[in-house]
Image 1 (cartoon, rainbow, N blue to C red):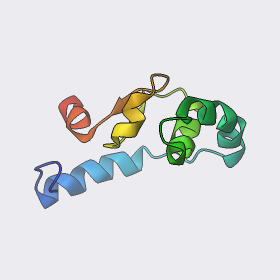
Image 2: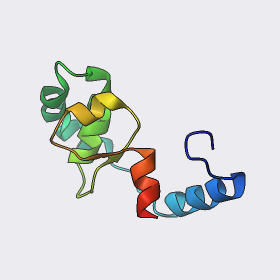
Image 3: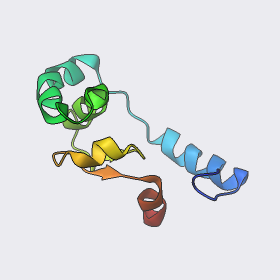
Image 4: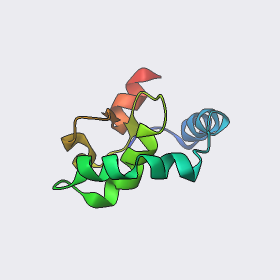
Length: 88
């Protein structure tokens, strides 16, 4: 709530929408993209490799994260909280 400026009710509404659209990515799909994700994140932040690998496993519009390291790579779009809220 601090980062978004939303009320508790608004946060619960947003989370409800997100959770109804949640899809689990099979680990085999993530692992199939792991090496490519590592290559993307080398020299940036290797701890973000799982997120990039997951995004590469799906036809998606990007990752929702306020992690500035993720924005340094250019392969996967990264949406910060403010940008996501602007879409709602």
